[in-house]
Image (cartoon, rainbow, N blue to C red):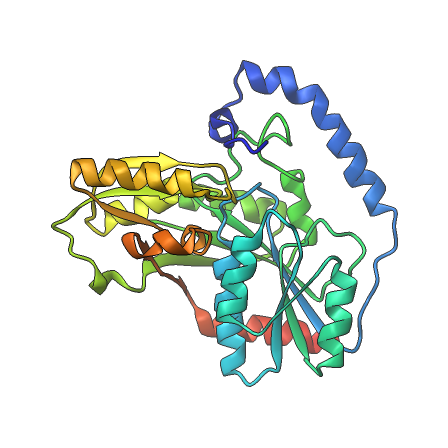
Length: 318
């Protein structure tokens, strides 16, 4: 059964639940250590970029992959996006398939084989930093700068898949930022203390279809994503009048009755119903007409610097 992410994971200081669960993090530490012992495979026929996270969910890695795809496609790279198939992540698969040249399979080696057969020269993996079998040419980590690393503990005591010191082995960081983040400078400083050579790129989320909405309306919003707070925040920043919110677990599979309950509330209170694009693709077709979604566009600061950085990393691997 899916559950919402525990709120204590994102507290800046650990609480009693963190301390109770912290002994169990030893299991993840052992797993990560064992995985390090396996040799990594290098693919010379195709260049590989991995965009992942060490914080569990809600860091913007899928929009980042799509932005990289867009930028590198404009540089005339024969590029494809790859994602390992998980039955509970069909929403991301649909988005990637709609917005990029896309390959999915049950293992990443197979994805690389298929991409090579199609003569692609570059592949961007959505997720996979914890797959120790592949030696990626470039490895990016995504963070929501406002949440950063939450309480800083490993799963299940906190939200981290790896210790923050693992940044030593990565090439770049994408920080999803907002104007309401007074700790950004400190976050960047923390990253640089761990890895002084790592490149940091700030990104911002904008609503691409903002002109389609009447901001004088009142809205009921709902979402089942890794960080529902960020969805609500971008709406508030764009002057949406939010009256009610419903939050579901990440990758939640909506049933007819779920949506019907939401629409019943909206109708009763005379509210417009709004969700994310990632959630919208999972809504039963017969109910989609009554719901709107926001389409986001990721803006990366210093895009030219980012493209040059990727090119230099690719070329040095030749």
